Image 1 (tube, one colour):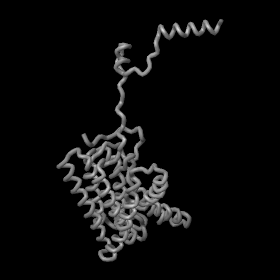
Image 2 (cartoon, rainbow, N blue to C red):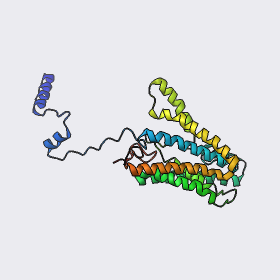
Image 3 (cartoon, rainbow, N blue to C red):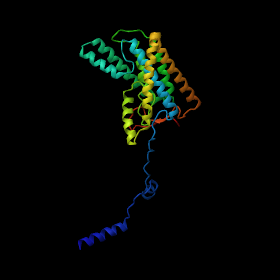
Image 4 (cartoon, rainbow, N blue to C red):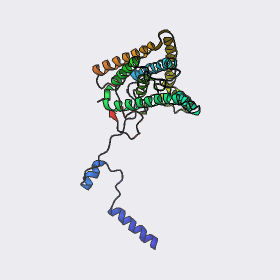
Length: 288
């Protein structure tokens, strides 16, 4: 008897107040008299910068070659100090601490700090300048790579002449982004090798990411640059830094020309957050 009464009550309630399932925002506003809550647009699925792979991929390979070249020259010129390979510098830092070689500790630690500051500064510039990101960052890199030749030598502990090179290569890591908004690893290959290995596994699993296909060319570009840097250093010494500076300048001129001729084009712009930002970060629309 109680069960029948409960069923009767539930049935009457449903008839009196039908459930509103699947109503639209407009229906919500018309039925309640309130403004419909504003729905935020979904973030773009592709967060790469630039959005067009026709420029992003060639620029990435060229910049990896530039980084390998500058790192090789710096390694030979500055007593085996890496300009962009901070994993190697970190190992050297640890060995220097273990040996209580405090002058070398200072030398390597200051180099790592300058590189980190370059990545920090490059990310801020990328967020501030919008569609001019490529042009501005590449111009700064060209000036710093050439400007290192004008700096005083400093001391062994504080190699002032190396700092502009290191700063330029730190900046470089904020230049390009893959489809997930992550900065492309342009100055080191550990990440590229790891992503290539995991990408091969995901290729077998049928879940490979689009960024997988650029990892091997990045490794090849950096390796080729390192060979080229060694050959240039043997012939020209420290002046060999003018080669990566010239390459950065050429890329900067291409970026400036494209930005002026086709403002907002996906060839030099994209809808992406700041490099390596949170997935919830606001997208910086440099296209429209």
